[in-house]
Image (cartoon, rainbow, N blue to C red):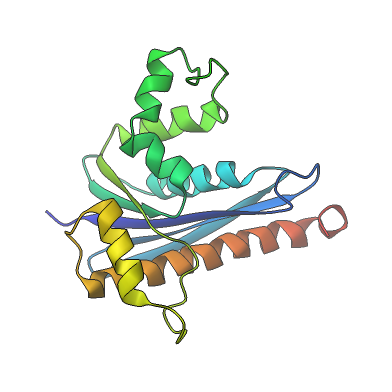
Length: 188
């Protein structure tokens, strides 16, 4: 069975400020087929946009029981699944280990509902790696990637993953731009 790869990213210009603009982007890749999607929101956070990227990518799917690999530069998203945070939050009544309410619960619950329909694995990617820069030590980045995610990826696959995650970043920035042009007086 083929695997669907989702490369996702979120961005927020003015994160933590009272007025800001966020964007999300995702690239869905299934064999030779590819779909780029993006969007954005005013007055949001980077973490909400990171979650939205994965959620919106999963919403595009027309069937269940898909094998999916999600590649994200968000440790917030990847660690929540890889390190069992989500399961702990649910067991603790949506409270953190510090007994505080889990932020973005609405999006976490939506994401859980969507991932429950599929076989989903999350992989952590370093964001904003410029593979074309002579100063980039691709081998070093690859070694870090495999140390985190396992050795099941070739160097060529790693390069492709980085290229697609960089594209997801571009799409997230397009989402910010789209929100800004819809109401520029509020978001400059």
